[in-house]
Image (cartoon, rainbow, N blue to C red):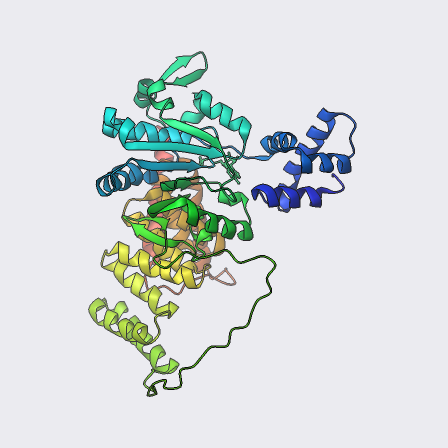
Length: 475
Ligand SMILES: C[S@@+](CC[C@H](N)C(=O)[O-])C[C@H]1O[C@@H](n2cnc3c(N)ncnc32)[C@H](O)[C@@H]1O
């Protein structure tokens, strides 16, 4: 191990945000060894000095450290909402072209996927209506993006007809046609610190923030405040959105998709790093009106919640909603009431309401497995399979013994034709169900959700699906 690896870690995090936590240290160590040996006989201390002053050397090391995994039409639902809803709406609202940024664009597949989709929609008008930019910190990968020549690895799951329409094959490589290639401009830019101007209407920042720690992600949000247009939309990867909800940008939901937009209030400033916190004494107006003690007690709220739960159990949803409104009128952030409200909305197929209630809970407690389960179910019923998978995975991760999350994850895998993961996950569900039946699980995990999952029916469904897989395999 490089002796002064901690100093390298700090330098890289400070410059570009990349965070090498323990599991990733090996990558940094290997890259440092490679660069030091390529340069000759320098000590790691000398190499550190060089790195501090040479941007060329910094870029070379960085190219060994960035993870550039990407492919065409990744998480396609987001591309759909951008091209089918946001761009048409923005074109209607503003005079000039809509500006889109693929931030952390890697070798360009994301930016070009958008360009292809928009070309399909707008044909020649596209050139005048939309600007697409890609930025990345890694200069080497940007060369690949500009060259726009790809191996079949970049086309996982892409419709072959679409590939034939927009690419020409040369040996093992596929060259993107100029009509699309010329539409995208690439820049080297550090999205954590540098402000690309003019502002963008739509920013895709997917699968980048996963390499940053919380402190860097907060800084990134303050930077994004300046890069995003007042009516713009910023998308993270499906599974990243929550970990980026700091209240700096505002989370919005549209047709089952979450994105961030500018808050209505005036712009927030990032906290100055070295300023000591000040204690501000609240000023109480001399003439403050006296508020009579009409706030319901905690016991009162608990009793309303019990009444609401009894109504939900009897499927008397309207009555249940009335009890829940009483709780929320007096305590707008009552998590249990919000979860019940989300569950009732789910029963009534009001999925947007379910998502809003669940999102409210997550703003109060980012570890609420109940809220994540509700979001998974809401996404599933709206056929947003990939998002449902992301939520169910989070529940499974937090509550590995909670079989309904495993079951629905298996269902989503099956619907996505991911047969092996589906089979494996149905089997896990069955094991958990059997353990629950035989009372062999010490701590059968459960969530405080007023939804019923009858074990017998679910066991039957799992066995049925597994039998189907076996008969398909036998054909
Ligand atoms: C895993 S790729 C994601 C590619 C694409 N957005 C996607 O979702 O398929 C992450 C990219 O983020 C880039 N990146 C990392 N830190 C960055 C920073 N501070 N500014 C700009 N790009 C950065 C990396 O170089 C890498 O190419």
